[in-house]
Length: 273
Figure 1 (cartoon, one colour):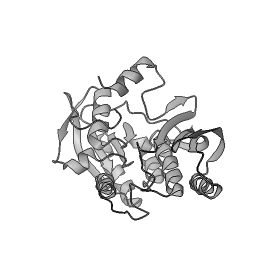
Figure 2 (cartoon, helix red, strand yellow; figure 1 turned 90 degrees about the horizontal axis):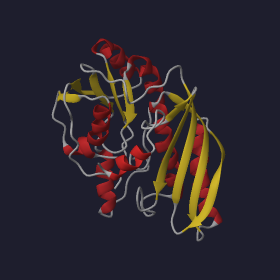
Figure 3 (cartoon, helix red, strand yellow; figure 1 turned 45 degrees about the vertical axis):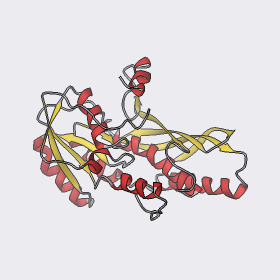
């Protein structure tokens, strides 16, 4: 058992273990975004840091089929940050909140030696929540977009290069309109934050399934973290519905396998510990 699983197991109950916790018609979710863990200061502007911190949290709400409404911010900031720098962070939080019609309703701030951000998103469930659990043998497995860009971007930054401001590593592309429309036709979903292979292993283990691959995927596709594309499954009878909706929203749909009896073992590097 890895340390993340060990920690989660201590608090295991019927509410946790998903991208968010559903309480009545509300979804509560939290993610951390820490300097020297998720980013380095020289890689992103302060506005970009705040923007990405918001987006990775909003992503969790979307794949639960919930619409973000409120946010709580926890900010640990260096005392050396000046007013203009703090304003740049504020701009990233506020612009992203406005784009998704989110109201920031509180939080906490402390001094620190680096920038650490904790965000809680409070969202309203749309009709019915979508969980990680629900996959059945025979269901098709799919993901959106093109995976691998985030890892390639990280490698460029680690080698002293720079990225375009719209690069997925800087600003993940979320797909709320697409997901909200496919939600009634799918059996389960999660966002791809730790790489397709790792997140697929979680989905399959939870539902006690293995996978029959339709195609061989390269290492960038399998192991690129922080993509924030969507991993989901659906019954074969919904294939045309899903394809039609994907085409309508200009979303690249990749049906890469089928759930079968068996197990799938993740063999990559752990992102958390």
